[in-house]
Length: 164
Image (cartoon, rainbow, N blue to C red; front, top):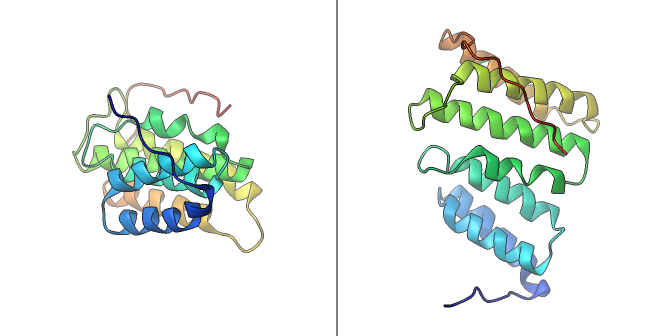
């Protein structure tokens, strides 16, 4: 059986540009493949980890990609801000995929996923670098989706597993 070929460390910056480009072209599976190649060459590459998380979550709406796969990457991120912010992204995008009827959410409804995302965004907000309000922007987006769709909590209580 064939094995993936390794890329050189020197090619990592260009490969990451390609991964971002494929994400922008709505080709998350191609972006995921490139990120995996980069992580083979440079296992601690934070940009590759972030792009892989984003590519996985962008694939929620069109495939059976699951949140656990993205969640497993969180401990590899460099700091608590990123861990909380991207945990929020995972929950928000999974909730949106459920809301848009692209996937089944199990016992949780879109409100539950978005509400959990908002909790992570609040944690990230407290840790954010000065001038970075991304977590606030995402929190506001979740709130507006909840309000515009009149979403309500589900019957099941969700207990978030620890990030690490």
